[in-house]
Image 1 (tube, helix red, strand yellow):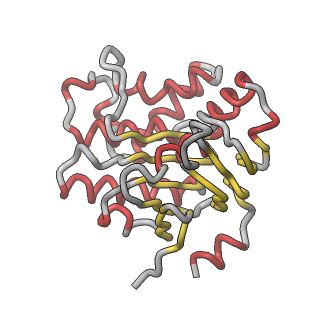
Image 2 (cartoon, helix red, strand yellow):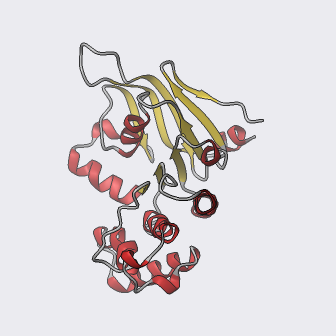
Length: 234
């Protein structure tokens, strides 16, 4: 049902026969990868270490370039863009959630969350309004003036999710976002992550080793030597 529903919507992310290798005398890291992710679609990608999950994430974000095939982000072929144009598109259209949070320790919670808006040149008043709305949506509005060192891991990850979504990106990429959290907090954060992806109609991609995390997605894909394979949901 999830595949039928996503097929009815335009793909926000699309990979067509994508390949990537880092040395001519070594096997390709990725070879012939096809993938489509529509708005509001939330998928998890699993696989053993070394199969190319991080490489795939970097290609989706435009942080690396494919050697073959096409990577389209919001209908734009990334191979047609120079580095500056790719950076601008990524800044506008992509949000990231990482395992290590990557909040800036000398900025308050509100300032950390507002960073994507600052980089996009959003006026200060609009920045403040949107940031406070995002903090409220994640239940952390009371933390707006605090510094990261005063917060728990779960609170820091909520900040990371708020920052990733505050500029209303078309794509949200999460790389092992619960790796530094205890199981109870991880489950809470995964529920928040899924709810926010759906609320913002973002195309969500979760890279994870965690079966529990993957089970929160609409689809699970397994990346292996022969490419991406859909896992049957029980």
